[in-house]
Length: 160
Picture (cartoon, rainbow, N blue to C red):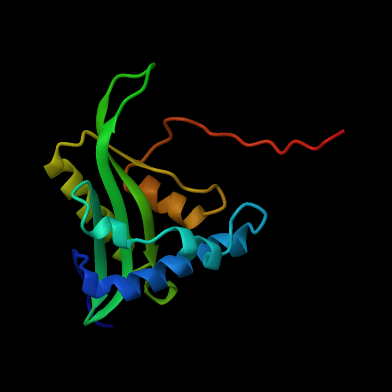
């Protein structure tokens, strides 16, 4: 098994990133098709390319040789609200590792890299949203020190 390396994504990685992004959205759709659009629909509306050259956005890839096996994307900003104190924050937007490379420290290394960059940018908090069905991701984030700060609940409404 070859070791992976973490590096900043470039436009040379774009095709592989688009493929992994498709796989991420497909996994979500398969888990909850009633909630998630198909990967094909999302692909038409969202591209990771906009992250690569935006100074407020970050994309890191995990590579084995020339193969991109995972990625993390995120952005840096000031979180402001009428009720809470402003905070410089980093947000993890997507994290994905190919299934055959999971449970090998790849996702943890990607998170460590983006966290270090957020700290360098002056962030004091890091946020991530994860769906409740994604137990593997929840366990990873908790292991990385994330905790609940708000609960977003959902209730389907059925017409009477």
